[in-house]
Image (cartoon, rainbow, N blue to C red; front, side, top):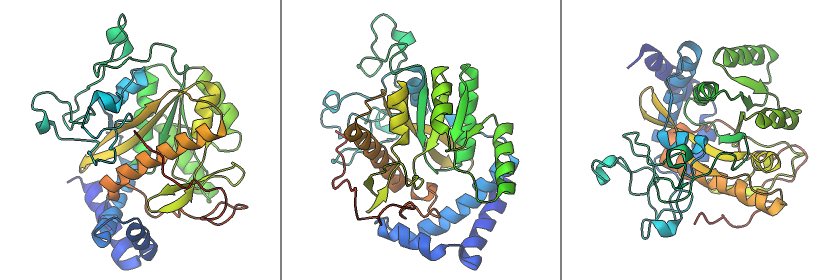
Length: 355
């Protein structure tokens, strides 16, 4: 185990067992979400968070992008319709349906194929999806569905991410890919309350190739970057601005205000919307994986709310699978300033179907 990881876990254990930084709140959130063995999950979360912090401070990013994510970024259609996988319990988005299929299966389920039962990436890192360039004539992906040809979904890419794993290193890995593709890259991030630490964080991100866009005026800056074929990443699991007209969406057992900005940005700029997560397989071995990928969609409010709810459904499914990966310290279920308390007002009553 790397020294930074060991020291980080000791730091996390100290924060959990001795200082008890928000320990009660974290345990309540995990239990309210219905995730079993909350004490074990919380202790593991604090330990892993400490390790991630020290790796961000002193190590170069080692996160790799899964091949299915690369395919989606390059323009392939990564997901087939559920009817193409009859009985598999896999929805159009590649995630689990109500039958309970796992979104990431072990390669042993299809020996030698590198393709999981759900048609998604396996732990071997095989790339089950073809890019448009690989099937330029037929426009057919390896999954049997049509690819997105060059220009489909607009020139830019909006990446919907979350506080999963070492999210700062994940941004750096995505920025490195964008640089290799000659695409500008930036993240939209809320500033820290401390100006000193915010300046340090901005400088640290810049050293890793990540430009930061503040939320104020983010649309115009992001629009210009996307028009150049750029990539804009946003964290969807933060409490949105109270002026955003945010709906309340079911998330981990409770309603939560959700920001429509990622879906709106894709719709108004013609960019593709790609959702990612950080999957930690072993200590220090993290991969940026694909959860969903769609075209730009429309600016109709109902459509924006539905797409945002879809993002949160994918995120919840991933957190339930990898509960120690998410930042449970965040006060995610509070109401933005100026909006009614959670559970009152603009509420999406039912969870969207992902079939």
